[in-house]
Image 1 (cartoon, rainbow, N blue to C red):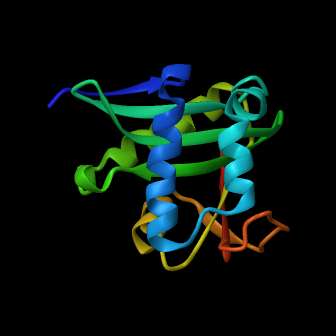
Image 2 (tube, rainbow, N blue to C red):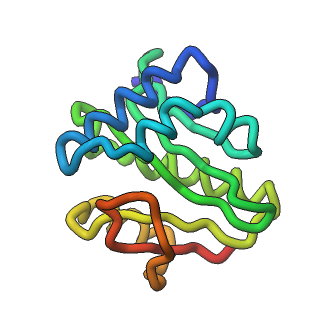
Length: 152
C-alpha cells in the first residue's frame, strides 16, 4: 500500500467535499457553513494562506484535512475526514502531523479546532497531539460543543 500526504490541488476539490459529506451525513448533517466552505475552498482557504492536505493511497484520495488561516498567529484545523474503508490505519495521524508541521512553518502560535463530544475517536486523536479543551468561542456550526487548542 503506497501512502503519501500531498497538498491541495484543484483536481481533488470534489474528493475534499465527498470525504467530508460522508462523515457529516453519518453523524450530523451538512450545515450552511459547510456548504459555504465547500464552495470557497480556493478563495477562503488556499488563497488566504491556509492549506488542505490529502492522504493518497494507491493514487486514491482517502483522507483530508483543512488548515485555515485566521491571522498570522492563529490557524484552525477543520474538516478532517478519512474514508470509512481506510479508518484504523492511523491516516489521521499523518494528516495531523502534516497540519502541525505546516502551521509551525508559518510561525503560528496556536492551532485550534471545534468538534463534537460524540466523535470520541477524533477527540482521542486531538488529545494525543496535546490539544487541550478551552472555553467555546462563538462558532458558525450548530454541531460544535467543544473547542480545543494546541499552543505551538
